[in-house]
Length: 527
Image (cartoon, rainbow, N blue to C red; front, side, top):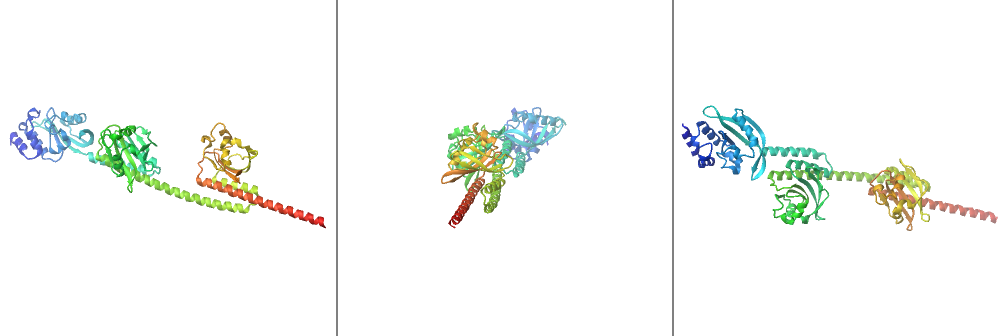
């Protein structure tokens, strides 16, 4: 069979690509008309046309492209102009990567590459695709190498799936041991941001009572972003955007300047540095809880794979956050239960102690020690208040690592803080050095000299007048809990009530003694 007959059969067979070969004006192609091709080239082209695998031939000095139907899917809009056109002209964006492979094949050395990344134009947009490539030399009738045969398999989908799975496994490992919700969001943002090449990622926590989102865990390629803690009002994003999010629909915007949902509210998006965005809402029981926001500073066409990944990561993150919240709530409940049990046991001990004591000094001494050990405080001391002299006299020191307080102090040494006690209010400070009430140069040195960094002062009043105080202090900063404040107040009131009781009993006994002495004297005089 001669070359002309072979070429005729090649073009006459059915199929869109063969019709393309037949319709092509080959007069301007370096390959010439298929009727002029030699038997080897014609046979090779017939072979690839009968294959359902993407294959092309780069033939002749100019490496003219001849390809099959399966390869058309990779060419997209480049077909049919690519048929019979030099490879370099068809793929200028890939030439630097393709040229060494083709030249090796033409030099007689087959080449192979697996999952080779190539930046191509797809749907008019730059797109990184992956291919497994095999270049082989193709010889003519004389045995000389006339071109290269390239068999191609696009592996973009598989590579993307493997990368997604690797990301998700890595993220699962990193999130598994985390219990801090902000840290969970930060780790996820970093992983997703690096994977997508995003400009910004943040989580917006929804607050319907305030009609706003609070931004947390903001990530940028340079590190943590400046938007953390910022509040963004629902109204500033527009009703259509909020409707999508509340319905649980992902918000995908290629360009906020042209999208009709966002363009009327452009100032908001520009203020956040947003040109393109992908928002994956997170809802439970029909209620919008939060949103994962992936942002870019330029227009961007978000792929379906990117949207799915954001959805998967968003679900994984919020599941981890819910798990962390549940674990924290459980720890809090257990700690609360333990705290209440400890307080109950302390109160039983206090009641037993007060029943046994019938001496005012012993009550002050023992209750201050009991309270100090329970709170692990640095100092517990009672102070009796002399309103006329405006002085506090210290009694019954319990100390741990600090000096006891003796004698008395002028209330002026406490600055204006003593007025709180005179009003019958408990005074609390977690860090006196940085508290505006105590941190001033006129007041802080006095507290520092007493080793008081944190403190609680409970007033004891009778008939509206301050008579004494219970002071509890710490040599280091300390956040006093509500339970601790209730315990201190309870001890102060019960101890002082016990003191008043024993003093009243002592006064009654003294009155009885005086009465007995008077009656005895009277009886003696009457005899």
